[in-house]
Image (tube, rainbow, N blue to C red):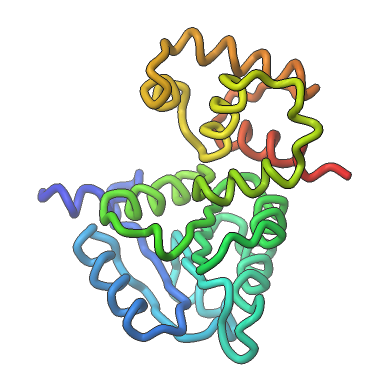
Length: 228
């Protein structure tokens, strides 16, 4: 089995089935080719999100990838479709693509379910490996956030985080991106034990209970940042 095909295999040894709603023909076709290279099955690719629930159900998709702004209004049709899809088919992973950091949309999507969601900026999706990794993590019920989206969410609520040290802020940012403890340690050049101590301090200062799964940690932190 080739490496690209192995990347696209689901846990049950079947290729991951993806669907795509993107109005740009060039980007849509480019993503379809990317999925093919990664070993995914593109079960549907459309220029709008009409009848999204039925389309995804018929396609038996594992992951749905949607642009935020789609016809006819090019405002929030994609994110609304994603929310509708999450309510109707919660087992389907959702990865939203946007041209801009739109924190309100990111918060709405994250609040709509228990993992299996992602929010990436289009112009930062430049690596086949990174993008297919994002699809895989969403398929596996993880949470994938563009670092710029994370920074925007944190910057919008600075006061609750004022008690965190600079190191704890760094760890929190990487946690919110969906990074594992080992990944955080590698990026900050510290030990895993030090990461664990910082995470414990973060949860203690923010009044949050630590959870054993990665996406629950992310959702807990973001839920705190969203509190009025």
